Amino acid sequence: MVDAIVILDFGSQYTQLIARRVRELQVFSEIVAWDSPAAKVVAMHPRGYILSGGPASVYDENAPYLPEYVLQADVPVLGICYGMHAMTKALGGQVVGGGVREYGLAEITVSQPNALLPDRPQTVWMSHGDKVERMPAGFVPLAKSDNGLLAGMADESRRLYALQFHPEVNHTQLGRDMLHHFVLDICGCRPDWTPGNIIDTAVEKIRAQVGDHPVISAVSGGVDSSVATALVQKAVGQQLSTVFIDTGLLRAGEVEQVQQAFQQALGMKLTTLDASERYFTALRGVTEPEKKRKIIGVLFIRLFEEQAARVGNPPFLVQGTIYPDVVESSGTKFGKAERIKSHHNVGGLPSDMKFALVEPLRDLFKDEVRLIGEALGLPAALVWRQPFPGPGLAVRCLGEITPERIARLRQADAIFTGELTAAGLLGRPVHGQTTQLSQAFAALLPVQSVGVMGDQRTYQETIALRAVTTEDFMTANWAVLPTELLARVSSRIVNEVAGVNRVVYDITSKPPATIEWE
Image (cartoon, rainbow, N blue to C red; front, side):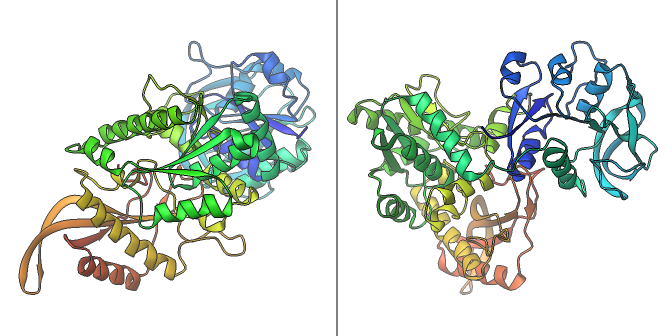
């Protein structure tokens, strides 16, 4: 049994990021709602608890509170932001509305040596309007912010720690060191949560879910669905039927690449369905992004239902849903968040779908998925290929979807990504280092502008280039590319792609934008 850290979710937008940081330490972490049944949580036998932040105030009516079993467990506890306030209130301290609110970067000074905080001034990320006015009995201050507010406290005899700021976000200078100290040193967890263990756990869950029933897998051509399929095959073997639908919305050479990877590298039987005509017909005249996704999601399932009828109607469908899909479609697992867009395999699924979903990657980030793919023995070319949305080029072709516009976009995208690959900016990281670009693609805009080619006036469409860097795909920065490369790509696109006379580069980060245009 591997060591575990349980994260109590009070509704923070960063809760899953806390889990991610713990997993980076190779320690298993699991998120549970703050009001989950005590018996269920205690049965996990955690080596420690982390209390997440949250949007509420502890003095609000019906505010979340710290369950008694956490403090009765005699294991270390770390409260973060709202978690600090919940701990304070539960132990008899006092929390009040802050006269000075702190949002964004702040400087803290450590007031005394302790097991959690590195003993030097440091920059942290604050996001709170309340403050601890009176610490519980037995606690001492660990740090103060440059505004003079309490930034950290502890009762080290009971191994209880609390921070007003968020150590899990990149903005906190030494946040990963703090979590390392808590998880490995204070809780004494063994770093044995590796890709191999993740795979073993997933295999057990898959087998428990599907039993001896047949399963059908949806391969979209992207990393996530490929890894999910390989994982399910490891779990159930010949019970799995794998289907790859050629929607007509795939990238250049994608059908051949996927077929080769699954059939030759993995030795799996792959059924390829050419459904491009059905997709183009269904999408004819549709320009609204959410409607596109809904149409694609419904047709996606209908095609698999038809295929399932040919292979004995398997009751289970495998999908490569990952955590950012879930967050953007329906909010966090336990909190409430604004829907950003309906992913075809989350918010876009039909209500009368006949399958039960098998989603072994649902709570994982992209980088974790890649590590699992490597551990499963998938080819590097498949594991490290560019992320690609399930709806394919349909959500990169703004406006109406036609075969001609998709072909135009496909050619421009191949030029852009080909030049980036030749420049060493895409592909597998070297010596374990993160590749410079996390995702890059072209989008076709329904914007026509006047140009001149060969002394003749043109009035044609625009290609937008997008390249970002990110760790977890929840936030992303636009990439600064060499001007020589951008000039070469622009020149090639306007000269080689019929119907395009202008190329622009997207310099918007996420947020406020999403990575994809639709």
